[in-house]
Length: 234
Ligand code: AP5
Image (cartoon, rainbow, N blue to C red):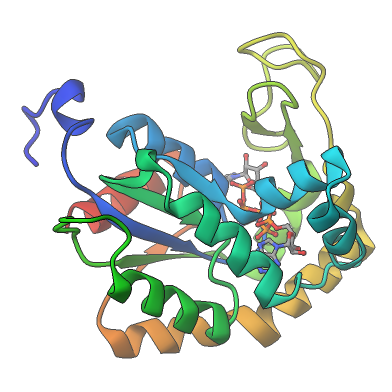
């Protein structure tokens, strides 16, 4: 895609499956929203889907809540079933952005098998690209403790780096911003430990598969977006 490509062109190109990998707070959700906006493909955030299930009090939500509240991963079978149901919907036919999935080697193996089996009939899908957004530990802590989000439109803010124009208020729809339950310091520490133990090994896993690109996630949002877009256009 060149610089002259129009927004409507971008919304018809085939992108294929994109995995955004990275620690809690690395900016996966922020960058996923940029890809959605640029390419018109859906963001599939397992964290958002699980939080929706918790809020609705579904059976999945009831099972997932205890794990999420303490910063642990929800069991693979529950998460994979939820993802399988979502990626088979028609809006994923040109591609989709997986934000927060896979998070274990078992989930990655499951995803490979699903993609190899083919999601849609007659689909000539582009191969998987995995973008790892790398950010150091102290920066992650600052980002997570400062994060606020809009419960209505999902826009993400940060009191330190990307504050809303009016404190605690969404710029887009005026909703009162909220702090995620798992952004308390004790839960953040557990989430970062869980990441190191269970998700970090995926960087070597995908590097070995040849579909891995690392971007420096400590740069300003716009620069991370430019690097992520470059990786996705591959
Ligand atoms: P999930 O919702 O996926 O949370 P996470 O991985 O911990 O990631 P976050 O949403 O906290 O961070 P992010 O990388 O999206 O960063 P963001 O863009 O918001 O998962 C929650 C829980 O669900 C898990 O703990 C687990 O229990 C369960 N779960 C989910 N998926 C699962 C799976 N596959 N298997 C099992 N369990 C699963 O940015 C963070 C902040 O930084 C924001 O304030 C933002 O404004 C700011 N920011 C972003 N980029 C920049 C930048 N470049 N410069 C400055 N600030 C920035």
